[in-house]
Image 1: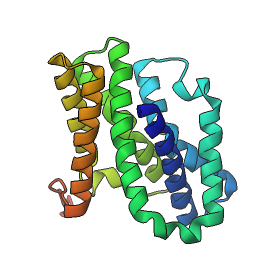
Image 2: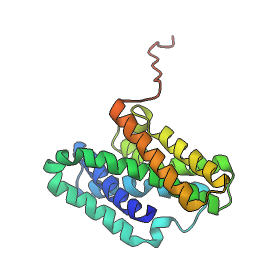
Image 3: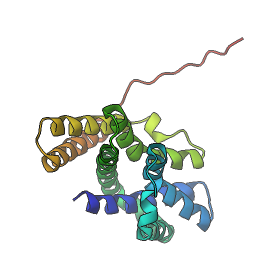
Length: 204
């Protein structure tokens, strides 16, 4: 299940990256790069930090082709993309949860401690979007809008907790996925967000 959701998510993330590149008037190469970074950047950062080599997508070049094709296709249908906004929100939420769970599983297989497993899940879930926004010269959305990274942390903690109770990987994964997706959609629908910090005074 996670593999299928992962494929759908990287396509959606690649398309969202292409739209972000289009808002910055990038050329076709820029579109391809931003699409790739958005979709596969989180897993790449995770693998580098954890010392997991070869990096995941290098063993699946078809993923790279899929993401870049999705990004380039977006340049042709961008004018119609606003009609799919609700679908994108759902797929993005599914991708966040799936990426987080995959990141947890990778770190667990490598034998890392619980805090690092949670960090691995969060990095996988959010870093693609962070890299996209940085390359497009924006403050990353994850740092200023609805609950996003915090949903990833909840999913990771819930997965580890259920697994520790001996419920098994399948039950833990499905339960965590359902809770994470529900929480993310509620956060979008009801505008839930973390408290913000604003500091305007200058040092003299």
